[in-house]
Length: 293
Image (cartoon, rainbow, N blue to C red; front, side, top):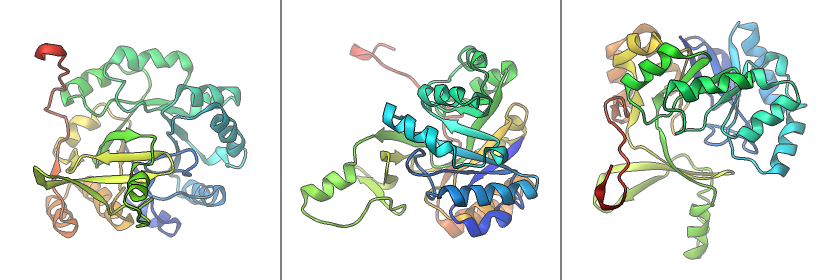
């Protein structure tokens, strides 16, 4: 199993790759929920550095794109040294078709957030000749293991970080600032939380970026206690350090590599955060009218 890290600062490439196998990065025009928006030149420089270290780089192009945005994305790819890019994470089938037009579908990694819940849907995507797929983040460990048993493509999953649970393309925070006639400059801030009146002890990280507004689970999802389980079926585990920093990424990737319980406790104390196992043991149930399942 390979471990991928998101990145905040171009200066930290070598440090981050000490305990990780690759990096995830992007530009805000095409990627969303990024730790930092990098220019094409910066992406090419980091990809070259990683290549020299025999490590991998993946692009995040996970926005839902209009036709005009797809055209701009196609042109932007011409600026990227794709020889040093292993894969491109996308959430929109239109982006996969754009990659296909450029004979790049073999680099596509499909991440529709919540749609891939079984091995049939997972393997159906094989006919598109793409590289890999993310499973839905709301399915249990048992379901993930079954999916992994029958997978025919590279299996990706976020194994550590705040899971995104709400998304709107609207700039909701900016709209709120307009409503209260205040300019707090909260756009793209990674230190904001949303606190419910009846659950004040459980603040939700919230982010407004170029692509819209996102609300995340309060606790950090982690697979530390299930490393043997996920290693048996995962090809790539992502450590998402959004709302943190590169030092956090270095410590967490070292923790997973060394399986150091004391380091785990130290990280939680330094960053004052609570961890859980996400939906590993929580079945997602949808109820219709009248409470019917």
